[in-house]
Length: 136
Length: 136
Image 1 (tube, helix red, strand yellow):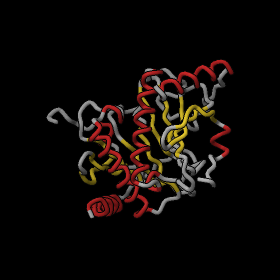
Image 2 (cartoon, one colour):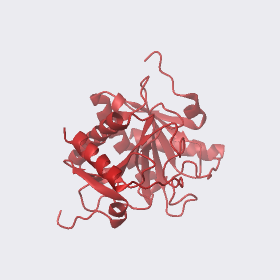
Image 3 (cartoon, chains in turn purple, orange):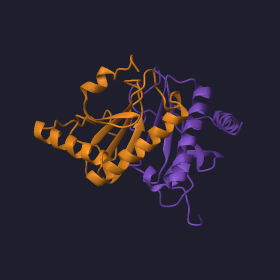
C-alpha cells in the first residue's frame, strides 16, 4: 500500500468523509447533487474485476452501506450507482442521490453542465452528517 | 415471480441474450457501444438495497461475470458499470465496453446523442458470441 495515492483529479473534486474497510468515502464538491465517491484504497485497480474476491465482497458491502446512508440522509427519488472511469481510470464508485426535481433529471449528472458550489458551512455540515451516518 | 415483467422500455431497447441465476442478460440495441443490461428477475426492485442479501451477492457475481465477458470479447479501454434508473426505475445494471476512440468518449453513453443501429446479421452474431461467453 506504500505506493497508493488517490488520483489528484479525484481529491481536487471532493473532500474526505471517512474510511471504511476497503474504501475511502469522499463528498463530491458539486452541491447540485448529494454525491459521494467510494475509492478502494488499493494501488493499480481500474475495474471491479481487478479487486480480489474478498475485496469485491467488501466493495459490495460498502456500496450497500453507502446506498443506505444516502437514502436515509437524503430520501432521494433514485440512487445512481456507477463506476465509469473514462476520465480518471482509478476505480471509484459514484453514489448519487437523485431527485425528480434536480437540475439534471432525468439525465445523468456527468457532463450535464449542472454545477453548484457548497458554502463552507454547508460542506462541513454535510461531511459531519455523512461521517456520523457511516460510523453509527 | 408471477407478477414479474421487465419494463417495456427496457425490452424495446434490447434483445435477450441469456438467463443467469438472478439476472436476465440483454444486448442494448445501440450499436455504437458494446453494451449489455443485467436485469434481476425480481418484481418491485428499484435499488440494489431492495434485493435480499443473497441476491445482492448474486448480482455482484453476475456483474463480475459480465465484466469478464465484456473484457474478453471486446478488449475495451474501460468498462462502465452503472445502475441509474432515472428513466426506468426497475433495477437494471448497464455494463458497457468503452474505447478511447468511441463516439462518446470520454463522456458517458447516456444522453450522448450517439446512436447507431445493428444490422440484423451483426446483432445475431453479437448475441451468439455473448451467450456462448456467458455459458462456457
